Image 1 (spheres, rainbow, N blue to C red):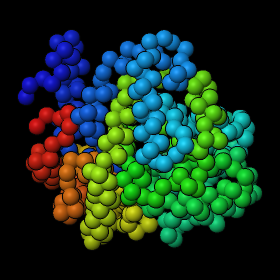
Image 2 (image 1 turned 45 degrees about the vertical axis):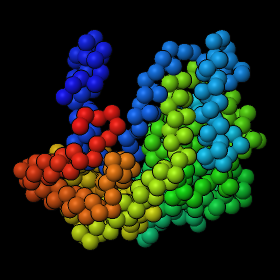
Image 3 (image 1 turned 180 degrees about the vertical axis):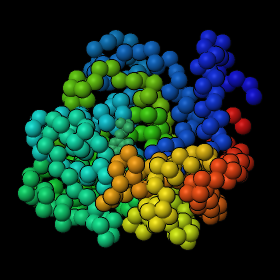
Image 4 (image 1 turned 90 degrees about the vertical axis):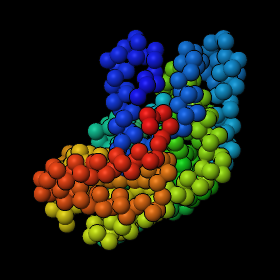
Length: 420
Ligand SMILES: *Cc1c(COP(=O)(O)O)cnc(C)c1O
């Protein structure tokens, strides 16, 4: 294999070797982490440009540095594409990532000590939705809702009761382990009744929304927060979107409230990803992600796996391995040795500890980007089944056999930037 990064290999062979090893890992494995993806060659190229070299504090037309003729046009392009794609009045494309984007939301709408509300982390929420170990749960009084134990679906009676009792300044909806469609309208009604600012954190599902495979939160919420690197298939970054009335507060919170100079190379790559997401092929991609997840869920159910909420409406499946008598972490580590990359995850009402929980979380954005279709999902389920069984039996040979089979299939489905 030729070195794809000649300057890097010449300057720093040690680092180049590590990058090469990662490229092979991403090429040969079946990556099922639902928050991960493969960006296009165009996005890769945009994020590796000389835009790295610029400082651009401020916003287009209102910068604190000269020499912004091109940067202003690039950021404006990203903003206009985000507005068109998601149908919003305002977009800020500068947040460094999802967590700082959410911090900016708090800075815009709450003061330390205020009550904020979100889904509990072990129920499928995100750290930044007011969970205790996060700054958002330390600087604010975080109250947390969950899902119903019988259905695995968001408990809207609890959401409403909590919101009316606690009167939070900000309510977050969305999460990291929610396999079902989020009812943004129901959240909107509750937030209006409680007088709270409602934020849809669609980090996981932004690509599905852009591609028409999940309903949009835009008509129902005050702010949309999203990362750009999950189903949206852009570079690592984030955006905040809103109606015009919240534009100033959000912009001020991002800069100068929280950040300095925006990462222009990322802004450019976000613009490219948004352009790609506006194409008909991306609508096809978003629907294929969901079709693959549904097919995979069906195949897993047929093999006796217990899926939280009984299946999926989106890109993500949360499996409770209790009936298989294999803890999530043991299963995840065994699957990793079998070339299937997943993460161990708590399931709602998990009797085990977060660092050693009962479940694993899987998703289809990456495999769909590589071109796998519903016809491959029975095979994927069979590998997972064999991997989990081998984990329980301590059968390392079986894991290596699966690893070889996985590598053989994946070799037929190349991804941008990876060796073939
Ligand atoms: C991934 C994610 C985030 C955080 O994004 P980072 O870029 O990792 O900081 C925030 N909220 C939700 C719902 C997420 O899924």
